[in-house]
Image (cartoon, helix red, strand yellow):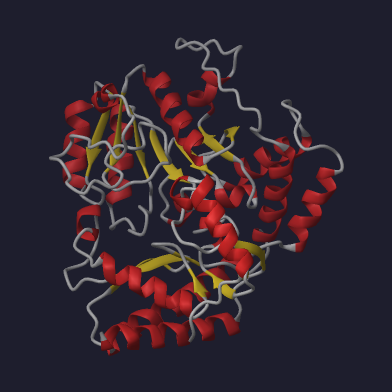
Length: 430
């Protein structure tokens, strides 16, 4: 282990980043590491430092960086044109693949980001129901639209179902149309839904919330109560789509929503997202629809662009192959188990939380972490140091989440476990 070498070129770029970008960042990670390239499971910064990548673009590079089949597909499409603002073959074929893969999908409406997809999903649900309110879950991340930025990460949570704005610049009126429930607390969630069912346009939830798996019966209970009152249930699968199973978390947990949102993996690392689900609920997107609610326009210059669609098709083609998800889960489970073992042996109070393809550690000795408020009890400073020490050892991850990819090799696993071990030894000695 040694301090990261920072070249003069990278130092100059870091200075320019702080001059021209607020916070010196693109808004995602506020760390002074400037990435130059990626290949497979590795990335390299401008100074030439190599890292095993467990951020993988915040999830989309599940088959690794610059996969040759994706590169070929994109290069071939580049020669034919980048975007047309019109139907194109690749987008139509990608829609077909998604419908065939995802249990809830009958039709698809493409957009360019997860923020857009969740916004349009909530809008479609409200249009279908003719009701304004949306229920989301405290700690749930649904992008950066105003509705999503309610109780995403409140430092001082309010009493349920009162929302807390996570950002300045959001109209106060938005608060009146959002209800907040506790993830994994079915009794409280059902009581809120029952109390407000006449006002609810929809319920949106990450079936796997950030790093928290649903407890047995939670998703099933949400499905039952929303179906009882005819309220559209939306699964935000931007992260879990094509990661937990070919059909996403709804296949993995065997609960089918009315709508879902997709992004990241489905676009093969390019800007594209989608709302998928019931053709009845998505019918307002059709200008010739005879539905009572009327037309719901959705225009996006890059929506369904053929470059991203070509990358998505190539990625999905690889994920279809035999053994894909077995490998993804095997790699993740080995790393997850070894991280918890090493923490236990060092007698550091910590819990490794998540599913095999996506997990991280919470430094806390409290009881099982099952909801957002439990996560607030963890030692965030210790996690930040853990991440910093791993970076020094050539392991690249975000502030939270360890994403597993098919590109991670046996050698990567061994080096990562070794880095876990020496990092934990250093944490213990503090």
